[in-house]
Length: 289
Image 1: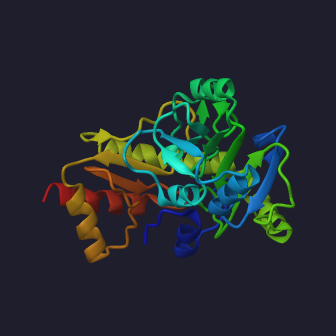
Image 2 (image 1 turned 180 degrees about the vertical axis):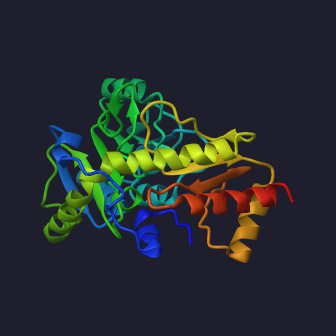
């Protein structure tokens, strides 16, 4: 089986961490000068934040994404919709800007958006769920805004876990659990020293697929220091690929996507080279059938 998430891949392959280099690191070096709260998942972190900021359904939140496509994860929209009105454009009614760095690829105008949010006097939230090890002009995503939200299972071989970064975060919020905070903090700290090595492996997997599908248009360009969650390309055969692979179940988990012609493939750090080759050949055979 080839999975999207590291934990499932590691368990399926019965692999460990021996192939990865370990470096000394801590969360404070990743997000300095900030408070960090740990949750069971990223969605709970979003709920905590909106409750903490006392958002109501009359308040408007503007969502911006890397690709500016029609696709926005329901994990985000469902939580935000419970507390506010949603928009895809900044307006005088905007009370929060919520930037999604899709699949680990940075929203390129994040620096300009940070200035706009500051000028408007509203919070900027960065969704770095897919990766907190990508950079814009030498600065790590998740550090431009007032708050950032991460989903740990998308980066580490963990079943659960989410992080909220910010300042003045209260432990008295009803959506915060001191017990869960301690558990997730401890487990994530175990994997954190492997982050750079994980990023290097994902990058290598991405580049392999990029070379294999070089004749097709890539959704994202891997330029600069980026930790990709997936590899994506466009083909008119995308519907056939998704329907056929799901129907025949050859053991490849594709990322669900609702943008026309997109195909989104996993590149997690525990996928082996033979598995990459198998996945690429399966997909290509459907395009060239």
